[in-house]
Amino acid sequence: MTDARAQPLYDTYARADLRFERGEGVWLFTDSGIRYLDFAAGIAVNSLGYSHPHLVTALKTQADKLWHLSNIYEIPGQERLGQRLVDNTFADKVFFTNSGAEALECAIKTARRYHYVNGEHERFRIITFEGAFHGRTLATIAAGGQPKYLEGFGPKVEGFDQVPFGDVNALKAAIGPETAAILIEPVQGEGGVRPVPEEELRALRGLCDEHGLLLILDEVQTGMGRTGKLFAHEWSGIQPDIMAVAKGIGGGFPLGACLATAEAAKGMTAGVHGTTYGGNPLAMAVGNAVLDVILEEGFLERVQHVALIMKQGLASISDRYPEAISEVRGRGFLIGLKCRVPNTTMVQALRDEHLLTVGAGDNVVRLLPPLVATEADVREALARIEAAAERLSVTPRQKSA
Image: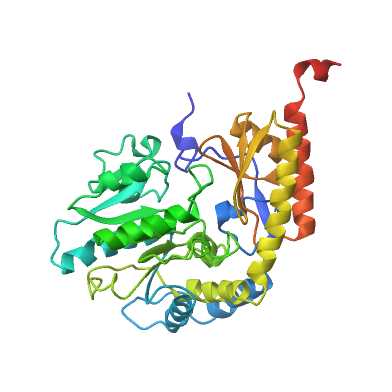
């Protein structure tokens, strides 16, 4: 029996036997010098790839000044990044966090507090959807509702009502006098790269308006250019009341944010919420640098163009190797391969081709390239995916021939 003390880290990760020591663009290099094409991007975090010169310069410059300041004081970087997020979204107010889970916690509290200050103390319940993933805190695993994340952590946090994904009738039936908000990902990432149709998002907006609910969007994975728009909900033309953002906003540096309209955030007054590290000067410097790049003229249009080339190439591979891949899903650079073989087998086959990907629910493999990936990078990835699909499609009889 292995001595648990031999390994100092919690045994919560089934880690791959890979050690990376540096990155450059869309490439990672192991400590032995082997190069991997990274189309996982830290699970949609490294939005501008590795060692992006503008991000590196911003971090180094700020590191020579201040790393941390308490939110007791004004932090100019917060004011600048907050204003830029407000100027480019529906929001009037921003609260900075360190992670997506914290951004969702803030969003949940903002929604509940809104109804509280309106005198509707009974309205605290939030409707969520099966297959969702909103984080790993006790509240966010309750919001996600997936048994594998809830098991063993005691009673589920009260206040979340789950309905089947895409079932409008079940959603309408779940709305009651205690309902405060609807929380949804525009594209379920962990749940299998399942986009919410644009007309359904518009219908959700209408239901919220009709019943006096707040619409909360979880754009932790879909935001910051991942789908070819700054935020995925822009494709549908709607605006939420509250939105959680993280992952790509920091380009690899821990950073999240909760955005809200002034009306939705009116209950979040002095002392009702806080954070020690959220909005620290280092994070703000990097977050502003990420926005500098993503908001450059033509950047998101180029993401859309390169992503379309990738999706067309994947559709061709799926057509030619249906024994391995049955469907290509997603939008922009959030792409899912629905597999006929176990998705863990596909992830390993791609890793054998020195291409890094990540699994998802519904037997899907996620492709999450850095937004700076070029046509050449995509064509290189497609060649590696085709090689893996071909190998997995070969029958035992053909192998022995």
